[in-house]
Length: 79
Image 1 (tube, rainbow, N blue to C red):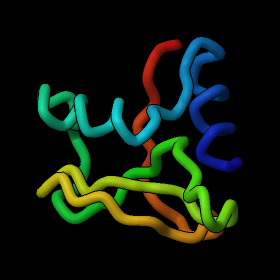
Image 2 (image 1 turned 90 degrees about the horizontal axis):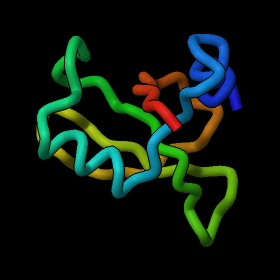
Image 3 (image 1 turned 180 degrees about the vertical axis):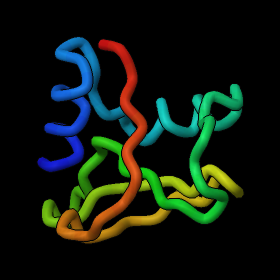
Image 4 (image 1 turned 30 degrees about the vertical axis):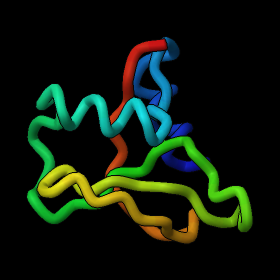
């Protein structure tokens, strides 16, 4: 929720990308100005455990799940 709030505070027309959108952004090299080892949240919740969400590491494209209480980067996109 904090990640989503960070996006809407930045601009009411932004949101967190889902896992597929984040992967596409990485392929298209739109992950800019993020640390090489920084995990970025997506809006895709883990189906078997709603307390976790998928994220992606821009440095290598690895997708992982993390508990939503973890502090991670967020990359907002336009709606």
